[in-house]
Image (cartoon, rainbow, N blue to C red; front, side, top):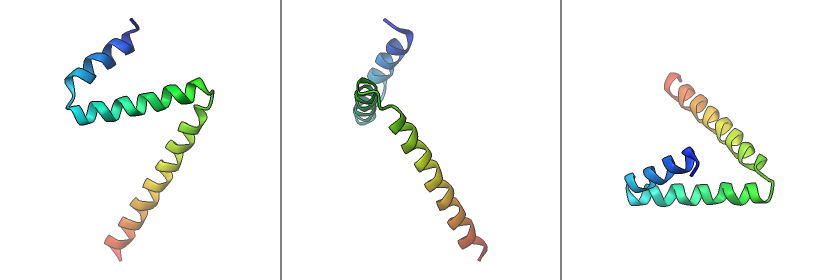
Length: 66
């Protein structure tokens, strides 16, 4: 078994059930994206989330200063 798969297997048994379920769901999504050769969608979502986080931080800072 691949080292990454072994580590994931161990962590899934170690984490709380709700965390393990969430990780399983996300890994399943990534596998589906890879099967359909659309992994770039994940990167787009990640970049979108980073932008939203930056906007939230900017708004929070303005509210604290103003």
